[in-house]
Image (cartoon, rainbow over all chains, first blue to last red; front, side, top):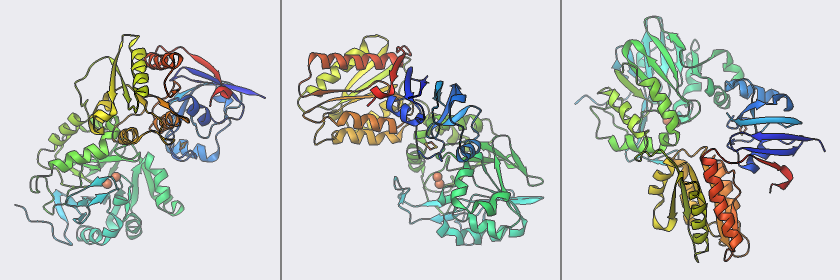
Length: 95
Length: 420
Ligand code: FES
Ligand SMILES: [Fe+2]
Ligand SMILES: [Fe+2]
């Protein structure tokens, strides 16, 4: 099965995950500092800074794009409850 | 003593500025979590300029009649060019749909963060073209008057902002610097003693957002304040800066500050097993010698003093036995009190002994994550009397948490499949 590797910089943990996993699922399990509210891509609580490997995340949906824009999210920021890890190596931390 | 506000009458606050709010003396419990002994007020204001009129905030929907009656005494709907909502909670946005309808020339000024919420409040398509989102540095002119916006989020919602009328030195602060205190004499030098309400409001509404309070104060302190016009409670015209100073003091550390990282171990124990685990956790945390470690039996205190301590601490570890498949009530009481302070990003962990199931540890971990703590070190459970290995795991839990605090935890690489 294709894999992706994601590093949570704030707690110093790297996790190997099956491709297609959402960031939220991993970060919760390892107890990283990314926080959640709605879990449905609306509240922007889970805003996450993608330090590297943003190209390895599935492109944001129209809805996610709109929420990021409404909340003035800087470049390379994603909603952890939406972003799917597709492969490669990704490094993130809470925004 | 100044005359109390009469129905249908706007009250002058500063040249060209009127209060057009509503009094709600019967209110006793607000947003479920807040109590008030003498009601509250929903303060709305009108600012008249040479080339336009602004309405700042509205009232709770069932007080709309009072609001519109007062508004009509100082403004024609056709002259209203600007509506500012400093905060979209229903107690301030209740009359907004009707006001937008009655004042067709007005544009609505809200913070950038408020836009998502506005969509939940109004039919977005019909208002879209009238909405202007603003941030710090943006302004809108009323001719000889200018409103400037200060982006002050999370006081106490993501959308909150303040509006500054420079020419008169009036700060429209929204919920910030307000309180639930209803007195028809309106002004801080005329109303009864509302100091306790001011402090109570801060403690329940603003304290969980202490970091954001400080950032807002950084923006507000340099302003030559003449009047603070909040959205609830007395209008602060007598020494307004004093209230800003009070917020500064309240948002500073509540305890004497120390410059080492602090780690608190809380536990409760039925037969002593969880207590001995707690001692091992604390001993492990002490190993580095660079973290201040404290051990507390939850049974020895009410939650409140612990909450003060927790606000200033860097790591929180909770030990609970599992009884009837759950952590015990004193632990939940303490954990439920933590919404009163900002615990986001602190380190958390859990441990405890159990008889046959041991749900307490994952349940506490889950709660800690929901409270937005980081929980990087997996908890430790021990069945009945902990073994030497289990005590060693407790020491390691303490040690690893301390290393995380010091930024010295070793980088771990794991496979998702190995995670529970
Ligand atoms: S948790 Fe609300 S947007 Fe992700
Ligand atoms: Fe509010
Ligand atoms: Fe309010």
